[in-house]
Each structure stands twice: as structure tokens, then as C-alpha cells.
Length: 195
Figure 1 (cartoon, rainbow, N blue to C red):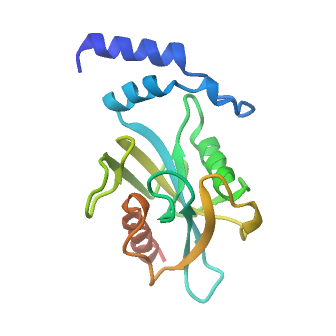
Figure 2 (cartoon, one colour; figure 1 turned 180 degrees about the vertical axis):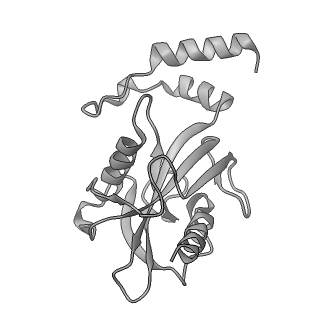
């Protein structure tokens, strides 16, 4: 990337993006579609993902949603998404938990902290890939956290999620939205190594 491109990109982001405000839900304050495309064409987008873990059943279970939106709708997916400008990671996690499950309540898994996710995933900008994480809309880097949550109130599930499911750790899927089943399998390995 040339210095002039970087200067223009910084200027555009500074002028057109809003500072994080948890009270703001007006999407008009976000980057325009044109500006967002320019940004995603030049740099990866920072994201957070969460995998709820349940130790209270006979077997360890991992939580996932069925996506309700986008090209990957109808498939198993992780809870998460983009981090907004100046948004603390923990706030981004709460926001995505609330968007997907209608409840922002969660606790960090004992083996990871906000400064230390259990896994950092890179999503390649591609329509579809075999055996690699992908996203048709952008190149992104996602910090992935294991969390514990209260039993979800399925009547509150909404927006990006059509439903929430607990998956037995020994019976994880072999396909999913964005190939995120690969991250679910990494979570199972991580939990087994730290049990």
C-alpha cells in the first residue's frame, strides 16, 4: 500500500466513522457502503467471536447459533462479528451476544481472558473455501473466546440468529457457515487439553 493510499484511508475513516456510542443504534452513523468496501478492500476487519461452553450436562457442550442473515443463512455459526471503532472488546462481545441471544450476560471461560483469546482466526475474503475459514464480504481477523452463559431464553433469540443450539463436544458438525466448524473443533481440542 502506498503512503498516499494510507493517508486517504485514515482521512476517510476519521471523517466518516462514528466514535463508539452504546446508545446509538442509528446505522446512518456507520461507514457508507462505498467507504466500507474501500476499507475492506485495503485492510482486514477486526472481529470477536464467542463459543459458549456448558459443563453442566453429562458431556461438555459448545453453543452455536443458526444464522438468520446473509449468504450463510440456515447454517451453524459462532456468535460474534465486527468490532466498532473505539469499542472495547468486552463491549463488542456483549453487543454481539445481545444481538444473537437477546441477553448480553456471559462470563469468560477460566482458560482465557479479554487480553488472551483461546484462538485467533483469520477469515479469507472468498465466496467459499474448502478446509479454510472464509467470509464472502471481507478479510477479517477474529479473536475467539470461550464463555459461559446462563441458559438462553430462546424466545429472545433474534436478528442474526434464528435459533441457538448446544452441540455435544464429541459430535461437532463437519460443515457450517464460514467453515466455523473448524473453530468449534479447535475449541474441543483446547478444552480437552485444559481439562
